Length: 342
Figure 1 (cartoon, one colour):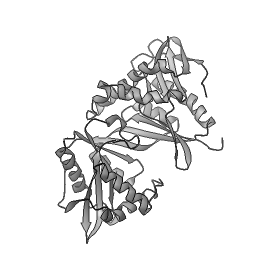
Figure 2 (spheres, rainbow, N blue to C red; figure 1 turned 90 degrees about the horizontal axis):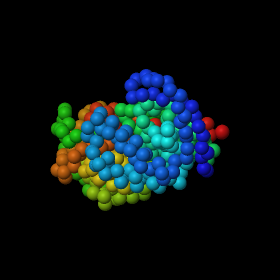
Figure 3 (tube, rainbow, N blue to C red; figure 1 turned 180 degrees about the vertical axis):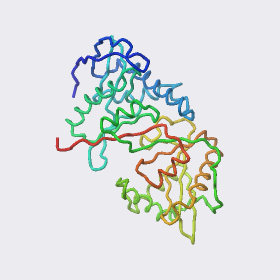
Figure 4 (cartoon, rainbow, N blue to C red; figure 1 turned 180 degrees about the horizontal axis):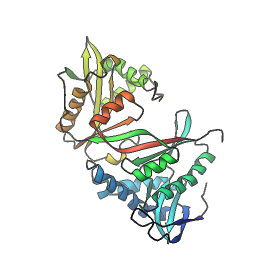
């Protein structure tokens, strides 16, 4: 569906904290086209630079060579999108990203590279852009809306909160320094999928429980296929055994090697990723996660990686508590439900 041009009267604010002149300006909200691609890349790069100031582990490659951003935005040109113009200059944009099924509903994702704004009036600009696109999404029966945004962008985070969004996914980084308080534990690197299968199935089932409530296919065949695929990519599995059974494990490999959108901004930047981790209930809180994470750090350092990345659900009580203690968030994905009877 093609969006119609419209005009909305707003106040223009300067770079300071408050209104500079309250000068009436006419902001035009128009459909996003290929003509807006280059200024959009500039807005995304500006957002990235501001986050990099707060998260210095973010690599510069993403903005030193913006072709990755350009190549990712270009396929979205056929999706509904808006650009906000002021005196003929694009000052904000938002593009519909990718549609998929999640939590029993049709979901629309706006990735972190598919939106941006100048600093003045950012809060109001985002509300206007979302209002316009949300109407399109709901008309197309996509009732679950997700937006990826930088962790330290307080203005946007608060704006999304007021629109009814709440965080669901975190992407976080750490350097390859040692893990403090590591206890002695007999950790082995496992290559036998048969010995990993039971704990991997239990790990996958864990996500169905409270308060995460994310349904994953936990069948033995699917878990076995996932383990085989992971090992073919070169991922390493570190396991703590007791009485011959795997009690805790952690998988590490190259970040964002093609699966999904996790760690998009880290692709090709010499970053390792925690792919999965699980501790059986009777061992949670005993400190076994630290030696497992140390194995991942050592594995990454030995292979010349520069940093370690993890993605996790904000509602993951046990895992989230551990990751927050060892990683620093740089990106959130926030989600909003819309009444699907509309």
